[in-house]
Image 1 (cartoon, rainbow, N blue to C red):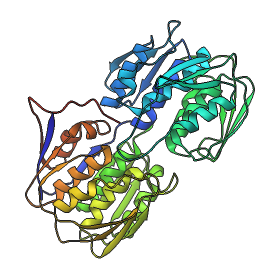
Image 2: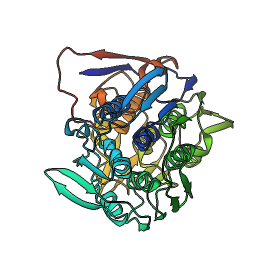
Image 3: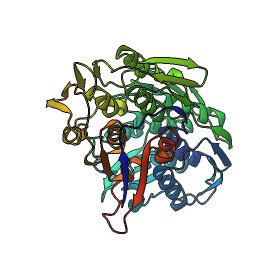
Length: 428
């Protein structure tokens, strides 16, 4: 099992390249099931989750191979099967994205229920209700979600919550349905727009992505093609916060600044200076950050995936900050680890009261999930002394070559691989 060792306190500055968005790449990879033609994808991050989705596609009868750095070639031809393997789906919730495309193409799908999640409950009942609205008969059989339909018929669907996964699954299912489908209270994340753009590039007819109402006009078939995935906004946001808390200047390349408006506004409120130029952002903060309040909300609100990173920044900011988590009910597991490093944090229901301290002190800490893991690395970089981060496999689900990129900014950081340790078969 790998660990990351950090000697904190070193100045960080320079340029860092942001990779492709994992949360856009995974549903787009699943969407290739909708065509028997070859699809070429670029700007794909080489992450554990991406490799898991490759394995899922292969297990279903498709092929997925790396053509070059960041480039995937996927073909899901006539041998596609209806059942996704439990051994793979249990390791990554995003594997459930294959259900919509399988149902749309084969008119039947059998996918294991993804189970629990470290950061909170993320039920798939919203997905299943949508499939039923499209005309599928849905049942649960031995831990599998099963959907069967003679045909899918376009309809109106109102989501109980603007679920990203449900919005994406239903967009894919409706793409080959008969007639028009309207998805109300749809998720509005940039990844939704990217999936819609990809499907349209294959011949789908989708409008309204990025807003609360999405219209899908079903088509008879989709074709292959070439598509470039958007930059990872959470990767970019993480480095924006790091540049502010480590004073910078730090320039983030291959980013989409329009995806960072909320993050940049909050950092500027805290005293950081940010310059934007096309696909790059430069952040610096010569002095100490000021405290601020954040509340996570569905997009375009403040992103829950940036909550842990901002909590680290607020831990060493002047004054008192409030961090309220309204999206997931169990996303404060990093708080205890930060307290061990000297942070003054108190949890009150779903709000953390952050009293800024002068400095953090290095300590052995654990990554409880993907974003919490990135936050612990950030804390180690600005702390005094040595920090050891365990459960690194969480971090490597969403940050490509993180240690190498941080080293390029001046960090004293290295990754070591232990010969023995817990298995990594419970990733989310």
